Image (cartoon, rainbow, N blue to C red; front, side, top):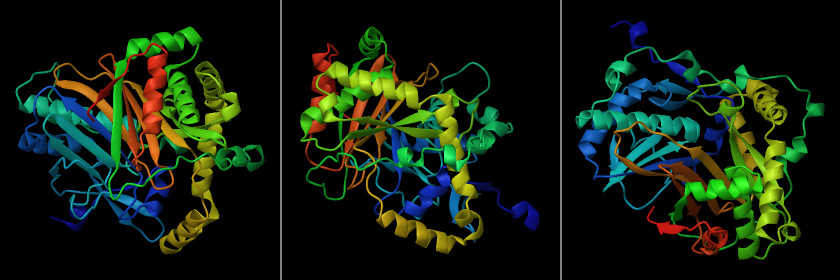
Length: 419
């Protein structure tokens, strides 16, 4: 084989992902996890075959993270993908030496399948699409027949160009710095949840409820489901802690719903929802305040400003002209001066529909936490059930309990669930 034939394909990180490798270490990485609970126990060996077959359709994920002279990049990876046993821990930093270089980790145990991903590869929307393909191939290997071609034959086709694009750059619109609210994007010091740090592992606290009940209550107040649940989270924070500073909830916005995109890379941004305790006397107060801010701050023109800021950062002198080793040093030094920007991250990926025959009973989303941002909340609706899962770096469970109690008080019956 010629050198040209042996040459690995390289991919640039998308405009938001470019920052993640600088903050990744052995003890902390920006990660998230999609968990599928199946109706039957999972066959580990069959899942190993399935993920290796399905990964061919996702070249951005079938890669290694590499260091160039100027920047990090992704390089094609031909090594086999391993499947691990669930060991009771979640969101443990990915060791590329253990995963054959891959920056995702697939684990199985009993009826559960966990797909944990480093955020430099994609966001939750891309991960769900990847997991869906893996589970479809797994079902095919078990003999389930679907309409149309099987996964392997479909994945032999050329990957659509749109899945490989950096949608931030595609939808970039130049906006002068003078017109950007950079101070508002950074925000001031928020309330931070306090507690007893866990030693070396995160814990989960989850509950399920009928999605129809959440939708009904949200419609009655004239707000979205995300706005309703954000308000519920703010109310729970105010009720479960001594709050003196503003409660700040960071809510990811899927930009694919605002700009036309099918990218498999990251294409989300965050809006900062800010609530002061004196404004949050009732559940309804919190919902209305949070929903109004979410509507205002997630407008297309506001999202265009975020996209512009993200791309402009990549075009700055430090990224264009400074070698990687020096960038790494400067960014890490800057990180030492940064404080937590939020009280809580709440990510609601919405209602997910999967092909019939995948044998999936439920889906959950786990959001990474840290010693400074100790509790985060993920939500997914699947099969008429909304699953809410808090990831926690502290022992105390006051916030999850307050959240579930608040929903119960609004007529939304929650049931604690194993996650």
